[in-house]
Length: 442
Image 1 (cartoon, one colour):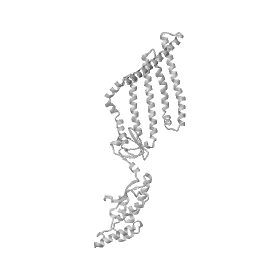
Image 2 (image 1 turned 90 degrees about the horizontal axis):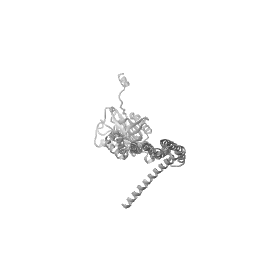
Image 3 (image 1 turned 30 degrees about the vertical axis):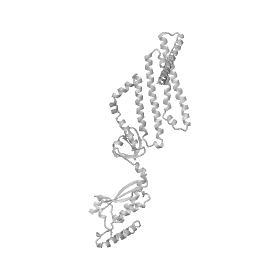
Image 4 (image 1 turned 120 degrees about the horizontal axis):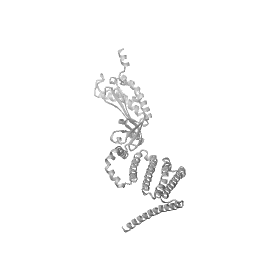
């Protein structure tokens, strides 16, 4: 503890000595200025006002000259060096005008240092001038920090492993926190109020702050949950019917998620809605081995029938299902013979149907299609009859996940299957049109 106390005492002594030297420096400048002006025949209040005006002009001129040199010479050198280096950080700092903001800080620090010298005989004005300069310095520091954060955001967003993360949300939160901290400092400097008093007052305003920043707080919570649970990434295809969104995620920020729909319009959705409402993310499909197909052909119930020997002979000419028909028919004949079934009526015993053969044809056609993923679920199922007939639904997965190619593959499959329906003495269901009624009346 003795060592700590001695170290603390030494630090305080050094700080006190520094302040004394600074005060002595200001006194020396004022004394020398008074000596020069006294030689010009000035004295009393005229000497004080003249010295104040001259020192103000000198400090202002020196600050402007320092700003010009920093802005036009130093920055040009820094920009040339940034162009020659291979690192990406310095290029982004130049792009976001980080060094330009730093150039404003140098003359302000000079002015802040000499305010007590300029207004040596006017302590109240000196105090106001210093507080005003400190206020501007803090404001410039905010700009510098914000531009640095913009640079960090741009650089990190280009990292391959971070491209799909909500980087914008985290940096927006950081900007809000930094803005609040610097805002409190600006208030403290501008009104000469202790930070403890400001923080105590803000405690009483918590309810108001929560009400004002409600959307921001909800957005922050939503963005954290989205990132933690990996629910949405930049580039994901999402569908949110409530907001009319169906497209790719462009940006995830603290307050909103931007989705570019497939018609090139952009839908802006509150970030928290992805937590409170339901949405569909197609990432699982894109990461799988294919894209699902669930489309149906509705068959007229009246066209469904047992197969006669003539029908079986006709269907047997279809090479894709010839062996199936022969094998199935042999199995049925053996069953009916063993059970002594009266074959004079087709309803008796077991019989093949045209819809059953067509269903097998559809499945075989899909299994031979090179665009269908054979390693994933593949089936043709018959759904319950409805007022629109009997649905034969294809449940399979294409190899491609690209939307235009996917639609072309599905179109080719159903072009073929719809054309094949009449070959099995079946008819596709469709609601009657005016032409059908006119034909019926004739």
